[in-house]
Image (cartoon, rainbow, N blue to C red; front, side, top):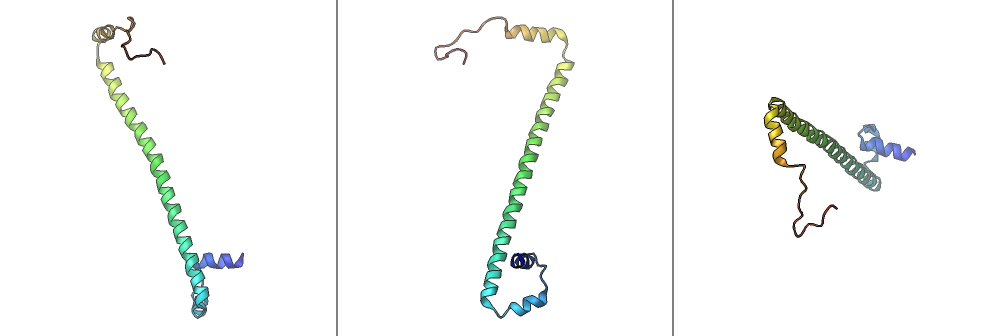
Length: 110
């Protein structure tokens, strides 16, 4: 536990500089410290990228929702300004009360 805490302090630049000066003569120890710092840096950078990715996905979902609300609000505003007679004419022109015939390739209701 003490070794891991010391290595973490070195990686986060919290370790006292005087103690690092004493370790400069031991090449194997410096290689282990360098390797650990490299692993910690890669891990923290990957964690940062994952957080940015998640934040972007969350924001993108909200942007899509706001865009849909915007489109619907403009459609509702147009429908409110339309009088009842043209709206009824439009609905009757769609002929919802008449059944549709299937074409050759249609298999019916799925």
